[in-house]
Image (tube, rainbow, N blue to C red; front, side):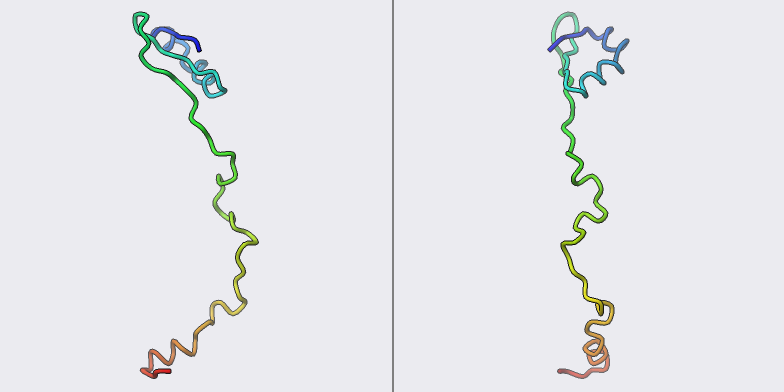
Length: 82
């Protein structure tokens, strides 16, 4: 892992960050004293990146889903018990 001084880090920040993101971390030093270590943030493998449809094929919804329990609801609103 290489060290760069603050001035060099400011001058070449974009390139250094890009290199760190690709697995080449570096240390920023001030007056030769190491101050911080720049390392890449781990990323997901993409399996959960798109949440919409992530359980496709795992759940079955009945065709009458929007009418299930209609009679029960009507009875409850009318005060009838079953």
